[in-house]
Image (cartoon, rainbow, N blue to C red):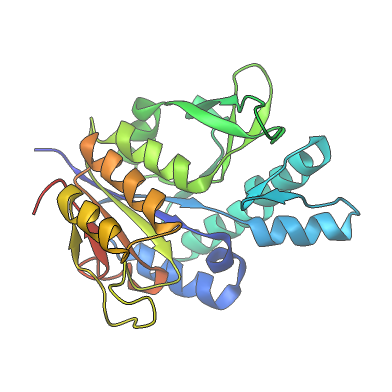
Length: 260
């Protein structure tokens, strides 16, 4: 029987504000078994860029990462935000270790090819070193992973945190019973986007198709659930989509599973 591993992905807004960060870390500390946290930090990067006179350019919500912006996101994601989270977890008695994908070669990527848009130093994940991460977990460490990877040729790459969490969950599923939790601003996938009490408790591939066809699931939620289903297909036990303040009770939210 595999040991349980819970992977929590949280956006920058949550970890960048002291109140929401404190609540998140307290809830995270209560999760039983092995655990790992992947975080963002985009708002802080944009703020620092402005203070340093570096233009922030976004295309469809994706940050264009030139040389100057790469320096900023490295400082913010791998430095300020990551170490603030680590220090907070240490205060709660967890032996947290802050990492980027370059540390211990845990996540290797390639620079996204230039097509219609040149995203610059943005990475698409190629490989997750599950054995190395498992080794850290087994000695009692709690990895806190910033959204940066590397190409093993000396280049850091700005990498989408959702993607990093998903690819990490898939790789770790060979060694652990993995639950992946995506935290966002709603309590789950909603039947009515204006009614936060209308959470859909369980979604599998068939019900997902029906929800898309009926228009209940639309826009950016479609790729989020598609990626969740791919994770389940790759061996992740379940993916939970919920609010950050609900991670202390993982029975809440929307559970994406292989079948009902």
